[in-house]
Length: 183
Image (cartoon, rainbow, N blue to C red; front, side, top):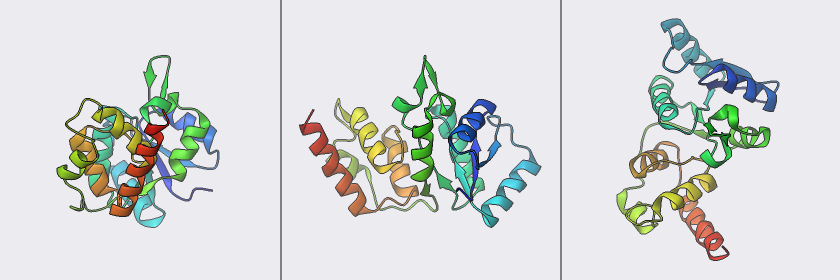
């Protein structure tokens, strides 16, 4: 049972989360449409029981996630890979299957202050930027680390902001390389 409040973008996303986790409490942001009283309610929930942010794996979802991160220190973040959140051309939480939503919530990561554990040199060393396959490699590694996909700058932010350790990063890179050898 989830104790945290789940924050999603829209009504259909909320319905999908409720199908996946009937006991979950869900709040809808309506995109950018949070009122001052909703922000206050989110901040109170974050302090008392915690908040998990589950936005769509697209640009708008990422912008909403960043805004919520600024408003809700130490909230947790759940990510559904784009490949699992696409159905009939629609991308979002509402398009994800129940197991994908459940897995994302189970793997939610704590956010906080952006550290400087990782830098661009780590992305270059891991083949996560600067090569033609970098985007697909970031997608695979993001799935292994449960931090979702992002462009180089966004991926670096996620590594640092979501508490990924050097050991986790290195093990996930090794796993990705092993998986790629079998393909």
